[in-house]
Image (cartoon, rainbow, N blue to C red):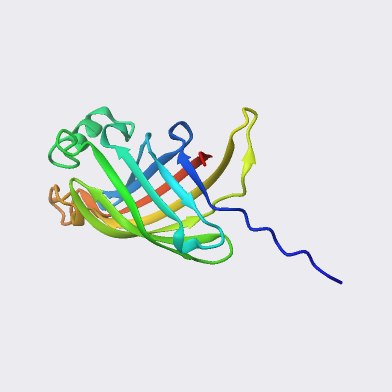
Length: 186
């Protein structure tokens, strides 16, 4: 019995589609609970080479002003110089440096994340991309999800307050999750 070899799709470039993509985060608050928020705008380019994952690359930008924690006063404080300093650093950026296969449906993407003008290497654990589909408007799309953990202090986000009972108001560890929809451009 002969089997037909799997067809590997050619390399392609995709745009991160901002209307259907977002970046979420979670941080410990008062040492007892988590606060969640999102950045509702994300844009960038993903070049995928299925036959050579090492040639795959990702660049993304997130406007700091798109932050939403469902609390306007907290969002205003997060945009201030105490945290993201949006007036001087209006965007966060990610640029991949290395992509490695991680299981049958995943990748480890190592790259530089820049927040407040400070770049640190982080690893995104990516599931996907999904197979391509044609949408009702004739565009070719795929999706992917990614997660990472960072230390906010690594990026100069060190504002905090001590609690009377010990501990601090804001935890250092930040859990990041990304959900992106990609539209083929070439």
